[in-house]
Figure 1 (tube, one colour):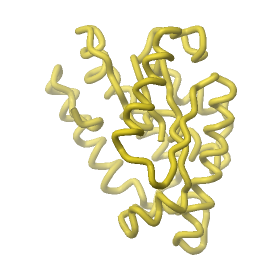
Figure 2 (cartoon, one colour):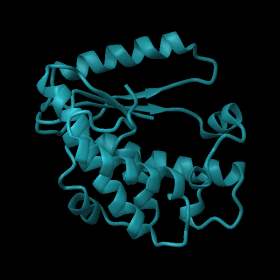
Figure 3 (spheres, one colour):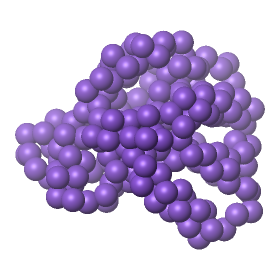
Length: 203
């Protein structure tokens, strides 16, 4: 299932979410409006998606895996000068995951592997870089990872380092083992309240 899936439970919500997705993923790199505007739109998207896509799946007894979801976004906002307490207020209605697995890899390797396939915001546009290139990408992503690692220490998330030559199947098996072990102690080792998603991988 796509992480951007539109609501299948409410036609009205689906229509609004479709507009939100158009704004976020077709216009979200624009600096014509301040970051505070885009942050509010993203919070609205997270809330709608959790309510109309994820929660019905959870009620039906399914496990849910989301990629990056909330904390990766937070790391970028913290780089832009947002305070932690402000983010907790803005995203207060967004359900938090039961389990987070932080995947750590070399930023330069990621850039070289994907080449020119990055959006401007992924290169660091909203962080104030004057030139968007490999150097700005590496700096931006490394700073974001440092903030995610701080959250990992605070919440005691498992952290998985991925080497440049590691096969995908091996990474998948290692992540699966970490998630399985963490789910066995939900609320005890994750710093969460046990009322949210079943799994999350933040890369």
